Length: 355
Image 1 (cartoon, rainbow, N blue to C red):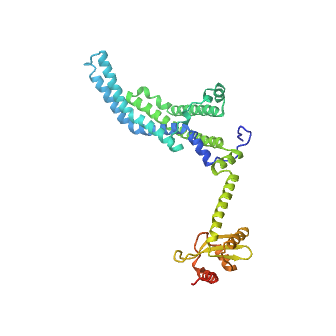
Image 2 (spheres, helix red, strand yellow; image 1 turned 90 degrees about the horizontal axis):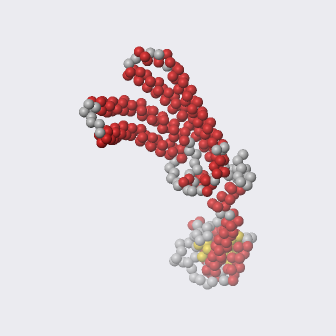
Image 3 (cartoon, rainbow, N blue to C red; image 1 turned 60 degrees about the horizontal axis):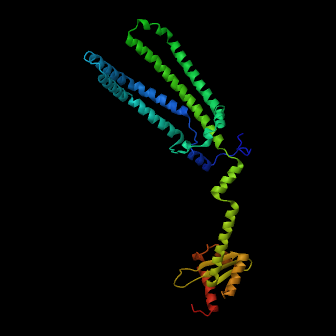
């Protein structure tokens, strides 16, 4: 099991934040074998269709040079012009292959890690020039894996090439009786099948290497329980601090609520533990609004403030319970209009107000 510097086991899977941090640093699961396999396979497919026009163009160039060889005047400038012309034409002929290599390299990277642009891996670090750290890389697990992988590729490709050539050994005995074109076609045929089988081997190795690379990266990104806790604090905040903030917010909200009690028209109570303060301004409100409510100690405080400010207290158990379910600052529901209207009428009658 992997361990961190503190000796704790990395048993926790990487969080989304840790994965993003690794990605920003350019540490992603990317296999070079996938790039190689994809490039070789697509190059083989392209060459299968592109080879005939390529050889025709090459034959035309060589035929042109051969026809004009008798007229050609050998001078430094003429030789330079000839070489420049040949390089330009051959470059144009090979352009599709170079373009394919560029596109496939891009596609292979996008397929593995998505779009990612970062300069972090290029930043200078003292650890990169540390000779001790450098020596460790020569004996690392990754170096051993890469060595075994390279040996496996060489051995498998060599074995496939040998078996393919050996399978055509009897046919090769007739090459001496064949014309040059037939000999070239035979060699091209054998080389093509060696390339096809090699591509299959590279694809197989790419799948294995990519799976191992993903596994290796997952192990590297694993976290200890302490790291998980620390990250949770960073992203979500310290639970103790959040609890303190919530407590302060509740206290402030309670103070604002208590400040509304003196403006209320009535406080409906449940003698056991509930108090709800209602305010109704005729002509300004469509229905009475709950401006304060509370249970137990808060209910007692509401009653105390109401008494000090001559706000009437009306005991009504079912109405108090129903009003307590209404959100603070919201008007009462329509089904309670009648009951609350009776309470307000009673309060207004006590104050001598005409309805």
